[in-house]
Length: 238
Image (cartoon, rainbow, N blue to C red):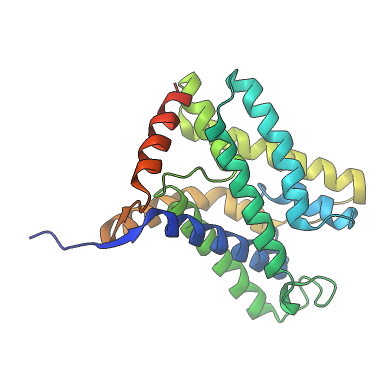
């Protein structure tokens, strides 16, 4: 007999994913073992140009990526904008988390904690990042632009997703390294932790999605919107 799964709202899953992702990024920055290559450009820019916050630099970098994505896809649809809405919510929550003293670099310098605590922060960041992305994949609402782009390109041009994702991550890693050397003359924000994330994230995300599917059933609360969104989503991916 199949075990009955717990029903959870797709919309609640979506918002929880954003909160968890922002928290995991704060943990990674506090550990100072290297942030994900995906957030590296915005993080490095926020370290150099403090007139915008980390979250606000995410708006800038993902807005540029959004325009490039529409050009690559050779079309625009309003559902694409949901990915940028996700970015706006994520950036605001990220900045709120960074008001907490242990995550605020002006109060507590990244990497200033005891080694065991830094390791704990990094491991938690790795696990929670995978959980948040897995949760995004179980919601019908678009994740951030940086997560939508590899999926969109893979679907439109029939490239294998794994190859597109690795290529995309490599481009972002290269961009982070380039900005780091231009503004600081050395590598900042990126370290061995970045490499670990690059290698193991895919496995952790896949495993987490299987565990979520085993125990939970994701059901939309706003069913008319969900049906419309899924229909339009399918159209934009062809």
